[in-house]
Image 1 (cartoon, rainbow, N blue to C red):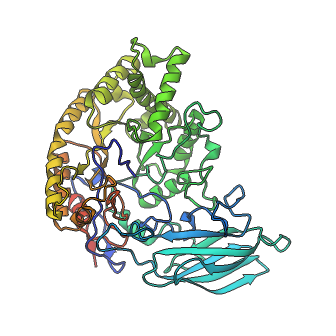
Image 2 (cartoon, one colour; image 1 turned 90 degrees about the horizontal axis):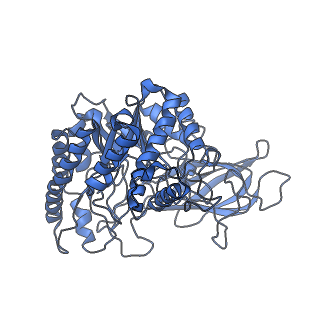
Image 3 (tube, rainbow, N blue to C red; image 1 turned 120 degrees about the vertical axis):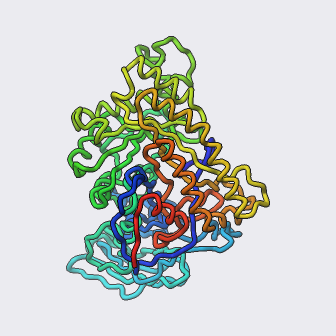
Length: 550
């Protein structure tokens, strides 16, 4: 998710309307905006409302010890080597564990039903909290497999399972853990090979591109540049599908690239990817080769260097700045080839230079004919700082590497329309009015940035965009949340998007997929992956021509 620090805008998530899976979808109709509307995917975790995986265990929180709650020791793939417990999901409204709850309506999705559990090894299973039940537990000694039904009643927002008296194999000591835990969601067969849920795939259909910044955990702290042994991300250290969970652990972070490829291929959506700030050239080279081999040839790839490297609140800003200083200190760096001694200038330039380096590596893998057609590097920076973060940097890039249009497809900012100027007693309707005014104010920056993009022959895009009610303040949080449930939210989303396209803007990457509402933002088109007819969703359908039918 975006940071609440140094942010010009964030995003809201809407809540009213409900579309059950009894509805069927049709393909998007022809729309002049359909090819330019994308979606940021919600992060992977036990609190995600998006239900991405059929196997719930793929997003479990890292295993902890039964008594202490400390992280459990694990093997190379993250499977526990002792008795343990795991949080499978926690979708309660924020912060139900420390009331009062932000949302005045206390909305929570219904994840009730019978989940099919299996694991390799033996374990005594029990529910760790609430009225959830573990029933029909069996052990098959022939296959060394434990199975059970996990029954979640309506109204349950958290699922925790304890695993005691564990044995990996018949010859193992008690308390040795287990492997290959699976928990298949209700509605899917226990032996299904399906990876992504029907609900998830249905929700992604209207969009032309998917941005993977959050699921790749691009804002994860990679360690400070110069911290030997901790700051360089190598290809061998990436997350794998075979890992026990796709959540971050103490050693690995970010969704496995195999799942990025599979989701892109299965949906047919273009992939907007973010290269980790700590990724080495070898990492990038292996990634480019992997995508070249794995992705269907019709899938376009938008490439960013990390995420919001300009943002003082993110570790990648510090990382990039220290790397820039180090480059200049070591000599023969182009970052100060005009004699400038300003470290911030070096920092801005290195961000663009690193994207150029990445582009060159992808050019080697895909060939020059794919560049700026299939492979689309996007130089993204701070919206409200057009000159130092865009104009000055691109001028330096042109002097150093030649015309930016030869290696960058476009440039991008993020102009969230926010409610920061709303009074502490603003009604939901007044909150929306302030956000509409802020959308108009953003036009100042859009016009400046569009002019810069035109000067250099680049597309002008938005890497993130949407309504913003975040910031972390509890002040008037109830009405900020309620504003997202008003029918007029559809009109606000359309108002901002239509102005963008009328200006000649290119990709408009909406932030984001369904998620919970709280003081930190209403970041989602809805609060539940099954809610597909909220005002924000209605705006998406109007923009893309997508139709949902009964």
